[in-house]
Image (cartoon, rainbow, N blue to C red; front, top):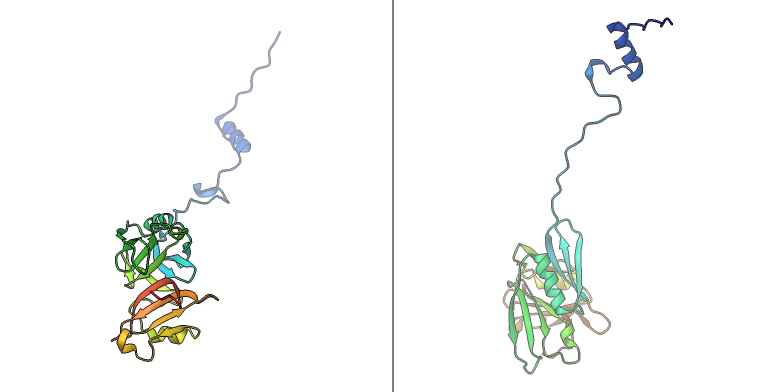
Length: 219
């Protein structure tokens, strides 16, 4: 039996066959249409704690981008609040214990410098140990975190500017501020609970911010 001879493919035919099967390559050796090179990853600036805001119902930590990082009500367990603040501020506080006296039960204070401190009861009279109060004696704390009221006032600001900006504030000592300075209660609820500040009697600049505070407190 005779076999048909196999056709021989010349090199030119081989090239043409491959081109027909795979399609033409782009001219100039460039990339195929529609493809794109990967762009480098954009760098982002990490958000840090920038402001600790003191208000009637609690404290709020604001980020360097203005966002709310965390809010802690004064009814938060103090141990949990201290842990959260330590994490957000990046530093552990100094602590100090105080014995009971005529105005208060036995207490413990956690302080991040003079700018911010948190105090709570340690002998648990009727559940009081599960709440805390705060105080600021300076405009900033470690890490350059500012401490201010919800109205934007800090220690060192004029107390009369605060009074002017909070028309419903209750003031004490305004008639004779040279004796003890002026005490102001503001951001008050129906039970007269809110935020308080004291001012220096000579300069009338805010010297202390404290909360929660009650207008009728007698100690």
